[in-house]
Image (cartoon, rainbow, N blue to C red):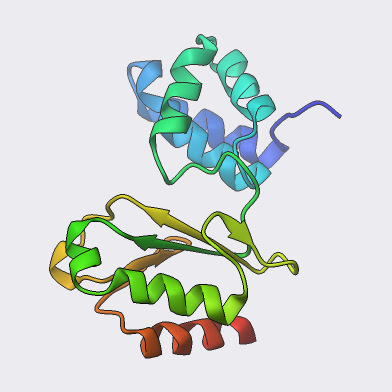
Length: 159
């Protein structure tokens, strides 16, 4: 089946385009919409967005590959993105990653067999003053310790 937006997503697509006097400025919000619609931005979804918007695939794929908020492969229900940049590393992000890996029995870049959790490291989430931190889906969790991280995972496991 060919990739295409649902009726609801098409309506949202039109609302997004109406907000931008220059159509190219709408690529990121449209990619965000596509990710919500399809779960991730596969090559087929990126091609669909490029064709729908009338732009070269390079414009779309360049943005999709640059920003960590865009997923190129399926991710779990809870996408754990641990910042491992300098501030977070100096304040314990390696222990945070290890505690998650041990608890969930997965490594960086992996998803649990049940599809509930994906663990990734990211370069920077711009929360250096509250390091170490991670983003779970669209929510920040800051000033983490291995124990608060495990408590969070237990809470997410019950959802």
